[in-house]
Amino acid sequence: MSEIERQVIEVLHIVLKNRGLQSVTVAPETRLDTSLGLESLDFAEVVVRLEEKTGQDPFADGRVPQVQTVSELAALYEQG
Amino acid sequence: MLDVLISSGAVPGRRPAVVTRQGVSSWREIEALLAEFRQEHALLRRRRVGLCFEANASGLAALAALAALQCDAFLIDHRMPLRQSLELCREIRLGALLTPDGQGGIAVHELAGQQPGNGEASVTILTSGSTGKPKAARHTWRSLSRPVRSGRLGEAPCWLLAYRPDLYAGLQVILQCLLDGGTLAVPGPDGDPSAIAELMLKAGVRFASATPSYWRKLLLFADGSLLGRMNLAQATLGGEVVDQQLLDAMKRAFPEARLAHIFATTELGRCFSVSDGRAGFPAAYLQEPLPDGVELRIENGELLARSPNSMQGYDECSSEPSEAEDWVRTGDLVAVKGDRVHFLGRKTDIINVGGNKVHPIEVERVVRSVPGVSDVRVFAKPSSIAGQLVACEVVPGRGEDDEALQKRIVEACRKQLAPHQWPRIIRSTGKMALSGAQKTLRSAPG
Image (tube, rainbow over all chains, first blue to last red; front, side, top):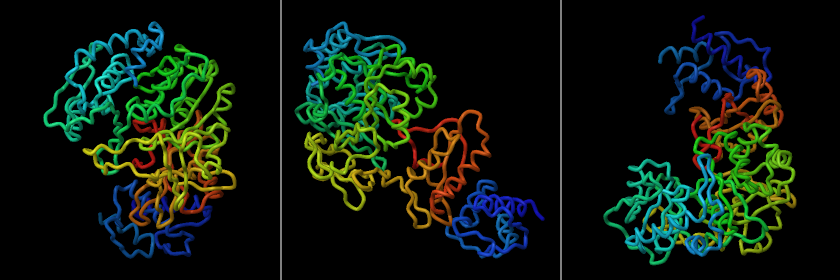
């Protein structure tokens, strides 16, 4: 897995843990939908945390890129 | 009027007027300076004049001289750089700016193109407007002095001046102290809590009024043995919402002192004070006018007030319309619970998380109650997805493990708050940022 995928997974684990969902394992192919247990505000938190780590926000300026999986989310940061 | 008070001989001349870390000035010195300034600067009579106002002998004498010369005195933060002050004075069309000359006197900077003065003495307080241009709230000496109650103490009080002297709260302390023939203890600019406590003890401070954030800083960081030796007769809190936890901590720290919290604004003046040891104020205050004529009501969750201690209006050269309104919207959100009205926070501090409104104070209350948290500041963190998220900065107690503390904070918030209220970013910091007016900064970017 790439470095950015590792960072995305780390942030997801932190957010999940804070929601009491620490037993969930996240991998690059994990889908970022309700099956993961995250709500929209949790996703907003993930994006803010990733911005602090990477300096990037792929969702800024009203952009709405479609992301289904962890690796697709990570790919957004690799483009930047 | 300040000048009349000082030169009337009402205050024994040799009594200390101002005590600082550097030394003591007597009322006699101020009286002498007042006479000197009145004569030297007689050409300022009845003009609009800015004063970089510091609470020391020459500052008090200068303010009194402007009163005697029937000037419209505009008070300016003495820490503002000269160029900025001059620009500000030009913007609001003042005729001159008075600054300290570095030798205990005052320097006059003449400015071109001024408005004519009102013709009688006034004091205008500059507060930061939301658009950046200052709001200039004009008071008369009468409206400023109206809330001051003198002669009740049976002693010449020593007051701590913990507010900026150029703002309403600071002026109230100065006037109250003067009218009672007392002494002002003025801490240095660095704000070091132990140095403040040392000055309070050295000067014999018995009366102190400050913002909750200022008191919290003292209680948390000043040397505990210094606090324990203080002999306060009265401790007042003002300028920010007072929470019950702090009131209880104040009671423990100063068991002999009378505790009060005051609600006042620059525009409305002093509105009311509460000294029953409980946060908020009695719902009964909404039923009928208070003893000094202040009236309160609630509209759409916001507190409105009408006060005889109000300003005359906004200065015509400032950013606001000049008429003082009848009922004033305070910008403070409140909620009635039983016999009590509670403050929820400023309208402008509300955090909007995906359309859900969050009051920072509510979140702070929960975080502050977590063991190991000394202090907390909750603020909005911009989010491209949700608009804003809740973030907070905490000052951990000594020796606390950051990671363990964050875990406890997250758990407490999960149990006691709704998801949109959870602080999503939690940072530890050594000390809390306060504004120039000694208030917690909630809208500063984290």
